[in-house]
Image (cartoon, rainbow over all chains, first blue to last red; front, top):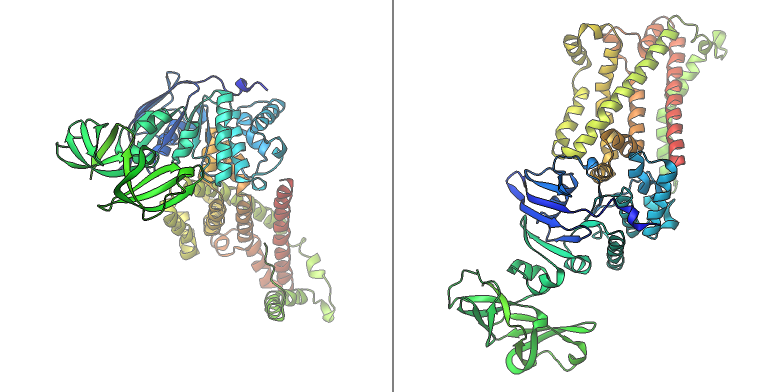
Length: 354
Length: 254
């Protein structure tokens, strides 16, 4: 099949200053985002951060208090969902129980008045795209959760949407299926070349499949960047903690731009921190940015094997617990109770109030 | 795994008592209606039903009332209960309470209230009685539809259908209705049974429906009146079985 025929074209999405309140709660505030054609953007954040609210407003399933959504420069803010040409896959299983997989995929085309022969042909092509040709005549209750979500993906793509919206489509699945389907979503998205917004609270999922990740917190988009950049350069302490593992080490602010931690002087990554020189603050250091050395500043508490790496937990003399990762091969000789030294392998870090 | 209870002596005895309780009056009524002259059993009373004065008109009126009531009930209640599930979950208890009011307000009050408020052109038609029956059916239909919609993720299905371009009428006809079919049929069963058995309102509004007609006939001829009761019960069963067959056929297609 011609994969490119699945989408009308790759669309540019411009979201400007969306705001949504529920009673006194601000669910989304000044939410703006530009998505390039064919790009996969993930909105990542904890429950209640506003990511699903943002997605539902893009889909037209929720109405913003203010702000606008544009597709290729044309506003769709006031259009109902049925007129927006967007395909959506939901967190909950959303296949129509009274229809087979093929009928589900063909439903959107039927609504659009596409002839039976043509819509069945396209439904079969899309089921082939998600590798479910053999399940075409099955009803949702006869399929596994992963298969249902793949059919939902095919159904969303069948209408040749301008944008694909994925609202935590993997969260109801078990870990193995989740990883498989995650990779399959990325494969299909890249083959089809469709502009996609993916919502998840799982940072590993976000990092694995996104062109860019937007981290949301309390209704605000705190940072939007490529996954590797975001991981290496978190803009805020919240992002640093939410994306990947992070240690908080006690430090002393020497001046506005330098901090001392574990007898090492580092540059401060967040220059507009507002702390006075001499303040006692926390310094954010990732586990892989710490190295064990011979020394006598911490005691090994525990270790847990994680395949190629082993997570070591040490405790400083002031009681601060620190996680660090070492290659499993060299972790064999590390035993709880051993005294060790610690070296920081980066030259800058975020700081936050203690 | 399905657990099927074994028919032990206790359960068998219980079922026997229940069956006796329900069947004995029916058997007795049938026995009474079949008593002919000289204590000879015959179905002569049943043979005379169709030739009774007014029988045809009563059957036609009652059948019309059944269809109109079922149509209006489904037309009003399916969108209403769906709306409650989609947009007003917090109002569910209130609407459930409102739907119960026809059970606690005496029929005479309902009839007088309706007669006092409805336009004159409706007062001379049986449609007004059908509207009363729609009210009476509300407590039963609300519960049946509420349970049906509660069993599916109606919000996600509606969002999915709307997102795929469905207008609202398509959402109702192709997505909601087929997935709460059992609940809709349950509502129809209850409404049909209610219309076929309702006496007080029809009598107060001076319409001769099947139940009021049976009462009138029964005043002059007891055997025929009982035969009519058995006939009306059989008529209701046949109607409900027909509806049930339609539902099973649709399920079978799936």
